[in-house]
Image (cartoon, rainbow over all chains, first blue to last red):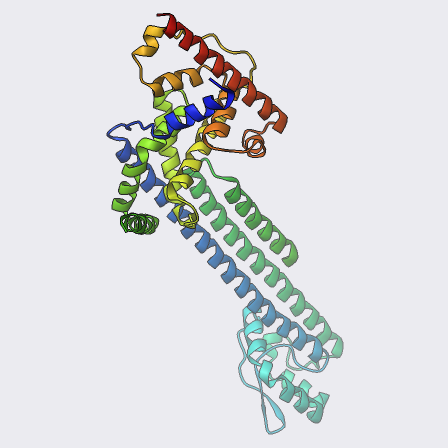
Length: 227
Length: 186
């Protein structure tokens, strides 16, 4: 037999070679196939859910940061010229105190009030300019409960400054706390979800591990950025 | 006309199988399982393991059937999957040892050969080759892989692949010659 003949012989002989598989082989394959498809569907669903949550959190964070920026700007712009507490409304060139909360104004009230007053900010500042500082101070005196000030004492610039600083500090602290809380909640949720997924699938492929590590890194970066 | 019809039917079956149609998947399995089991058996010596490998191969084929673009035949595509699965199996089981020593197996006496078909006889001969030799020979002679492809699949240098192929050829030729002479003497 020549050198090339052996290959040709093997090839031609094995070409039509067949073996009958076991009878239950198809059923076994079917079981495995169903299992695999279920796993695949779960993976797809999980990935979609994570993506959706990430997008939602990112979007929510952006919107909230934007509103907080407005708040900061308004406080900085108006520092030293405007009253920091109580609802005020401009009416025909006068500043009138309308709503006063209980003794101590809360952070929530402050935040909501300032946000609601954003569209009126320009008008208010114009009115303040035209009315003068005395009128502003007078208006300030009309809401003494909020500031914990006695009605007979005049409010000085230094006091306003200190109150503003205090309010700003409170806002910053609250904001950081809220952000941290949110990040922690999101992280807990994701870690739980990942743990459940890991329990279901002990042997994960490299792509999933990379995806999860990316998610964790993203959260770490987000929290670091927020800090 | 008939060929076109068969081809069309298979395309349809593949499309249905991609949509998780169990009937279509079963028809494809029924059609190709015997051939694919033979392919796996020619790489994996044990029939039980060969069946496991074939199942894994079909599992992979059905889950990735969407990636079959229709260029070339479906059989060749599935066959390629089976070969890769067989090699992976051998790698995992550490059976892919590239020892150069030809193992001493049972003696292929003339009476033994005479009672078996050509295929069984050939498979027995090929099985007697060391794993590294057998795989290179099968991939080159049967599947038509180039030495470059073999070196990539088995993670060996091209020259090693060449030398193993020539050694495998030599061993097989010697054995066939020996058996032929024995048969003639009888």
